[in-house]
Amino acid sequence: MLDICLLGTGGMMPLPYRWLTSMMARYNGSSLLIDCGEGTQVAIKEKGWSFKPIDVICFTHYHADHISGLPGLLLTMGNAERTEPLTLIGPKGLERVVGALRTIAPELPFSLRFLEITEPEQSFDLYGYHIEAFRVKHNVTCYGYTISIPRIGKFSAQRAKEQDIPLKLWNPLQKGETIEWEGKVYTPDMVLGPERKGLKVTYTTDTRPVPVIAQKAKDADLFICEGMYGEPGKEAKAKEYKHMTFYEAAQLAKEADPKEMWLTHYSPSLAYPEEYILETRKIFPRTIAAKDGRSVELKFEEE
Image (cartoon, rainbow, N blue to C red; front, top):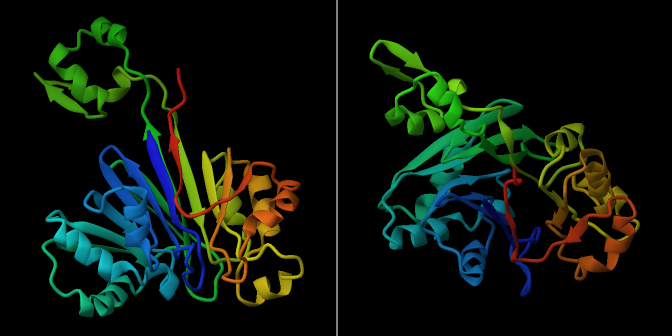
């Protein structure tokens, strides 16, 4: 089970009813953030979720509306008596940018681990999450992310018995471990069936439409995509500032065919995104004009 909450849906500046960009995932006792705009702490508190289990924070890029909430969040996590290391992932310059922000949050009871993205596409496996970063097209270096929860094949007790595998080895083999026991090597494929369908969420913002987005969001359980502009006639502005309209986002979703798409990162001038959703749904019917705090509990498919 994977919980997803879109904490903030605003772009550029916070509004009384809309915090800046951030998404939170929870899986198996560990939490992951993508972006940390101003108001992220308040949004987490409003949702009733906890700061302490946050183990990973991924940044799409280093514009203020995506990272300005970090110093305060770090201090709050420290005040929550966190001592475990925190992993930060982001484009080149991550350690320098975070170091500058930490001028106002210099003392923390936990260490920071920096993983800088150096390739157009790069993957990380942390705390049960498979994280894929992919380069998109903004006016600074910017990445989208796909967060996946892989699911190993089903364990077969019958196959284990047929191969005389000692009972004490069943559990570690089921967890994917390879074991050497009494001169013989036992591997997970001896007792596991084919890999089953896992869970997948793709998140992208501050970009023009590029093919890699649809590729990465293909058949996702949830696709969260920037919709900076919903009003007609904003296409030229979207191109100039390297953002997307609702309708461009919907075209990407039409190609990717996720189970659902949530729009986010609205312009401050876009007071009522839902006014434009019917036209957007003509392109991709399963589109939601998301609001702050929208969440979903994604579950593995039943056998």
